[in-house]
Length: 510
Image 1 (cartoon, rainbow, N blue to C red):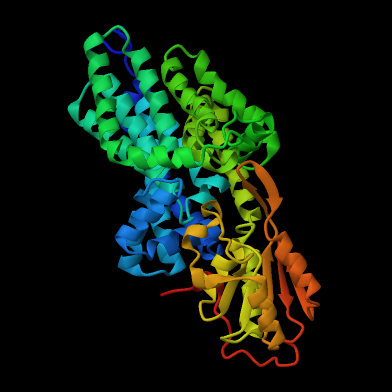
Image 2 (cartoon, rainbow, N blue to C red):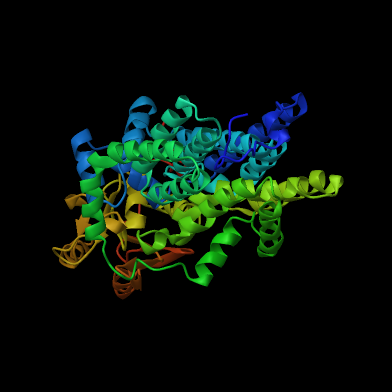
């Protein structure tokens, strides 16, 4: 037997060496079918929201312009480039665009099963896959037109390749590690923190084998070389974003919110799931794998000290590793019937949380507002948006309406609030709006009431514009919290039926 892990004669647990039984494979097929169904249904009832529409609008640009826009943003270019290809292949139908995320997410669930099986056997892999399949947070973000699905797949694959190389020293595992790690870095910079954790874990695991340490370092050096073309862009993005208020350790409240999101919904599940995830640390044969997963799940949170990230959204990249730890803990239970009952119970909690999920907190209310505007406005009416979330939504779902962003003359929306995709013709200043009202032009106001933080300073988006709408004596308002719609005072006198009934915002495109 080849010495592994620092020269000791520690091999994989026997369960991991056994092939999956036919029962496990059938159960895995059922888990994957359930995962696909939940994500497709969620996609059908979830309109695109600001972050997704931003990606879609960016992907409409030419390749050079898209690369320039990505450099002016804070993210790497791989996701918008892939989205551009996908939109060229199938258009901008909502389900088509979401289908790429769903496919990547399903691949990530299978990768989670493979990692759990390789570490501790088919049972752990199956339980982890089932938890990911029904986790409402995983369901939500794995059907959105964003980076989460791709990052989950690539990070799990890189960790799996790294684990396999440390165990078996096969060249194909090293090549897989390098390729997946490099792609992960071009997907989201957070991958760099997780990969640094994997690098340090490998150095500890291989500390008694100098030759293996050298090859391990070489693999990560190749990853760094592959990332080198993006390094100047990253450094400029980091310099531009360098506000000290962004770079802080997570607050206890942030961590509690993150653990709640990763615990299938209810807060009261956090303590028992945390206890289950700790069990593998006390099993001699599982300690090394558990330490890797725990390091990935906790040390990655320190990214908030070196990168500007949204704690309870971006850091969900650790979600699959958390589910693997919980699955390992369940498999360690000494009472056989609990090993079968606890996963079923947790799947039930996950499904209950999914049934209670009413769609995106912003997209669904905006869709309702869009129905009102589609019924009561006509092409050429002026729709004045108080902030960019409403503007991008209406520009995507009501492209034949003249939607504008009310801003002071000469000012522009910041890149962090979608300003890079807001065209010059979409802006409207107070003087232009006043001139339109003086001509008795039909106008409508729309606002998403939300918090926005610019370099650490919190404020309510569009509050000044909303005050201006109220001061203009609107004839009527509609409230779909957090969305409000204003009907201009002159619109009632010249109202006309809509030229055609509005399409369902969730069904836009072919």
